[in-house]
Length: 245
Length: 245
Image (cartoon, rainbow over all chains, first blue to last red; front, side, top):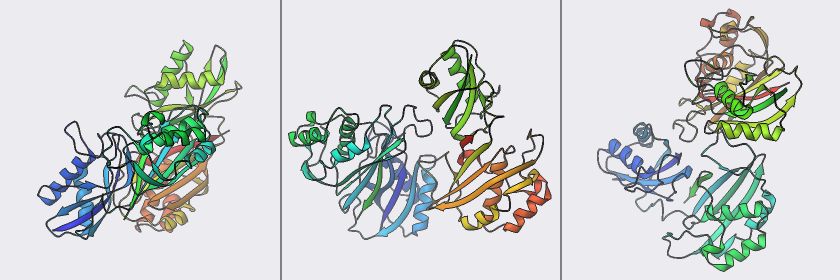
C-alpha cells in the first residue's frame, strides 16, 4: 500500500464543490472515479480544503492510498487520462509517508480572490472573477483588511453551517492589490472557517465602495455575530492557490 | 449619423469566428444584433481583424454607424446589456470621424499566443491555451522567430484560402518568452495573412521540440510554398491583443 499526495488544478464551475454528495457531481467524486479506474479498486481521495461550488483550485492537495506500487509519473498521467473530460488536472504526484494527511498535516492554506472592477462585464473571465462594475478603492480595502489579520474570534465571518469546533483562527495575511482593472486579494492562514474568505471579501467590498470604514470592519469583527459582518461574495473569483505542509 | 469605434473583448470558443456566415453564430452577428436592439435599426459592424473560430480578443476594434446621437457610456453599456449572454464585452466606445474605418485605418495589429507547456492538461485554461505536453525550448523558438521578422514574402505561412492581394508583409516583432509552464508569443505587424500567426507558431513549435533548426525556418520562408512551412497550430491560444490607429 502506497500513500500518494496529489496536487490539483480545477475549474470549480461545473461542480457542487469539493465534497462528495448525493446532490450532484463533486471534484472528489471525479477524482475517486478516476483513481478507481487506475487502481482497479475503490479509492478514497481526501482533500486539504473543502472548496465550495464554483470555487477553483490552482494548487489543491489531496491524498489517496493505492495498493499496487506505481511511479509518480504513472499516477499523474494515469489520473489525468481517466479524469477526462472533467476540468480537473493532476499537476504532480508524490509518494508520501503513511502519516501524511492532506487535511490534518497542512500547516498553511493560501487563497487568492480576483475581482474584475470595471464597467464592462468579463467575456474571457466569466465565472473566474467576481465582476464588480462600481469603483472600488483597493487601498482603502487593504487598510481595512489589516483589522482582520492576527488571532481573532471570526464568528462574524463564519457561515452558519460551519463545522469547525472553534471560531478562533489566526489570519496570517490579507493583502489587497490593484493591477489595472483587477483587484487581487491574497490571504493565508493555517486554516479558515467555512465561507470565511468570501465573507471577508464581501465585507472589504463594502469598504471599497465607501459604505464602510476600516473602523466598521473592526466593529463587525468585535461583534462576534455573523449578522454584523458583510455579505458573502460570489465564489467565482476564489482560488485555492497552495497548501503548505 | 455618428460613427462609433468600439473596443472588444471576447471568448472565441463558442463562435464560428468574427465574420458573419450562414454556417453558425459569429461575433459580428451577435454585435450587429445587439446594435440593432440598441439603435432600433439594422447596423453593420466592421472589425479590424477577421479572427478565426476559437480565436479570442482582448482588444479587437470595430466601427459602426448609429443614426441617433448617444453618449459613449450609453453605447458601451447599452451594447453590453444587449450582448448578454454571449461572451462578448464592449470595453470602450469612442465617437470617431466618418473617415475612420476599423480595418483600413489600422496601422498595427498585436497578437499574443499562449502555449501551456507541461505534462498535465489545463483545467482552468482549457480552450484558452495550446496545450503542448512535450518540452519546448522557448529560447530556441525565439532565436528562430527572428528569421521571420522584417519584410518578406510569407507564402509559406499563408492559408490557401487567404484573400490578401499580396503575400508580402512586414513583421515588426515576434518574441517568444517562457514564464514558468507557459510560453507566450507576442507579435505585431501592420497586418497579417490568413492563418499567418498560427502557421508561424506551429512552425516555431517544431523548433522548440528540436525537430527543426532556425535555419530550417529560414529555408521554409525562402521556399515561398505553404507545403514548406510548419503545421497550423490550434486557435485556442491566440488572442487579438490590440489594434493601433
